Length: 254
Image: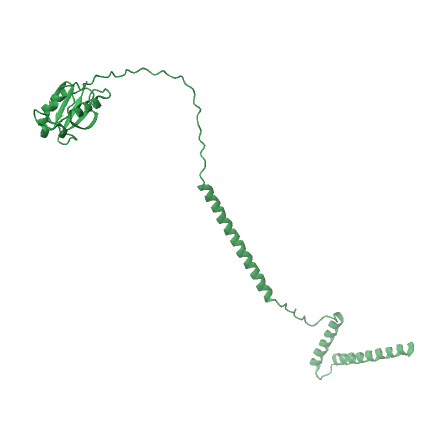
C-alpha cells in the first residue's frame, strides 16, 4: 500500500466520523431552535446534558469519576506482641536494678554509721614544775606497852569467872596509830575474847573507859582490875546498849 492510499483512507475515515457528529449536532439544533412540539422540554434537557458532558470530557478527559479508597495496611499482631514483651522485660530489669542500687546504698550508709570512729586522744605534754620538798611530819612517839603476866588459865581464881566467855571490843580514842591493836593483844594474853578493834567516835578520850552490858556486869570489876595492871582506868559503867556487837567496850585514850 502506498502512502497516498493510506492517507486517503485516513482522511475518508475522519470525514465519515465528522459527518456523523455534524448530523447529530444538526438534529439537536433543529430540535432546539425549530421548536418541535414533541417532547420539547425533555429534548432540551437531554441536549444540555449532552453538551455539558462533552465539555467536561474536553476539559479533563483523563479525570476519574471517583477516587478508589486507599487499601488498608495489614498490621502484624505478632510484631506488636513481641515489641510489648521486650518493653515489659526492659521495665522489669530496670526496676530491679534501681531497687537493688537503693538497698546497697542503704547498707553502705548503715555500715558507715555503725562503724566506730577512732577517737583522737589529745595528750597534753606535762610542763615541768618545781618539786616542792615535803614538809616533815612529826612521827608519833611509840608508847611503852605493858607486858602483862601470861596466864595459862583464863578462869579467875578469886571470882571463878571465865574471861574467854566475855566478848570485848577495843577502840582507839587517842588518835595515835596502833593503840587499839596493842590493847587487843594485852586483853588476849589475859584470856579475853576480843572480837573487833577500831576507832572511837572521837580522839579526845583520856586514859581508859570501860563499858559493859548489864547482863554481864559481874565481869566489870575483874575487867577493871586486869586493865589496871597496864593502863589507868578513868571510868567504868554497866549501861552498854543491849544491841551492841560485844559484851564489853574498852576505849583507850591518851
